[in-house]
Image (cartoon, helix red, strand yellow):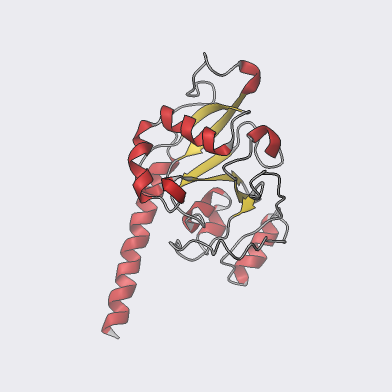
Length: 218
């Protein structure tokens, strides 16, 4: 009994820490009218402005940054790192291969999709990423569940704490359910104790990666 109580207290402390981290990361440091970016290297017609949220452990405020829509997801994250050099020290903490980060596109009250590293943003198309989208750069997959607050504040309060385990890459399984699109749907799923969220994806990357994997919240 005492051990269980101690574990509950520890979990409460961890949850408080996650809340503090999220509060810092949700602050926005600039405006859409003044995004970060290199005007000399990215022509106006190829600019894609995104609201970028950084890893919970970074303590960095979110920023509007414009990228080249011809970039692959991997190159986009490298470019974002040039605009936010503090990210460099987090590679050693990432679960990604060779310390690479994971990129998730967030649509309010709809879905969270993880983008493949080798596909260009242009090839992914507006269904998966478009101008003024919110993206989350994180160190793990599935994405820490507390980020679900960006999809639905109410839903975020009813899901389980963040998972630190990565899915089995050998399974090759693809989620088949459609994105959640209505608040009423979220409410029904909350009542069932939903702890994950999935959407259809298609395979467009030459390497065989999915064009946009829907992350599982656990």
